[in-house]
Image 1 (cartoon, rainbow, N blue to C red):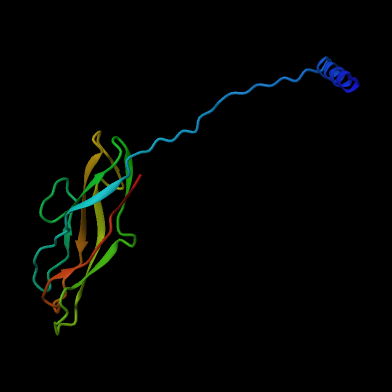
Image 2 (image 1 turned 90 degrees about the horizontal axis):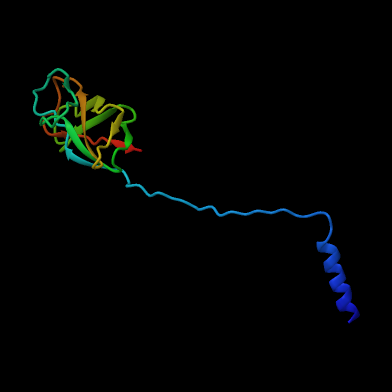
Length: 160
């Protein structure tokens, strides 16, 4: 009984002191909005067509519609969202002869000055799509350029 009285006395003294603790609490939420990932799909290749040895440089503007020469891509993602366009980092690629059986010494063709429409930054429409067009400049063909089909890959990157 003595211990019970001591414990009750302790509780009365502890909770009846002048100092009162004040506390408050609230609730917050962890939130996340998941957006549609951005993607790009090639529709058409950049096509410099046919040309004879010694042909001067050829420029293909990006244009604003497919024209049989410019490359075109469909960009898809979150509707009404802007994105950046990244063209080849050194702004130059080499096309090489597909079947290297030629005795001619020149078997590469440089392509540079890549340009896009839209330029540098695009904007997806409300349905989350936009067509992107790319043009570039082919270097002059050497007079001893090996005849044949040339090809070279280039990368177009889109980033939110």
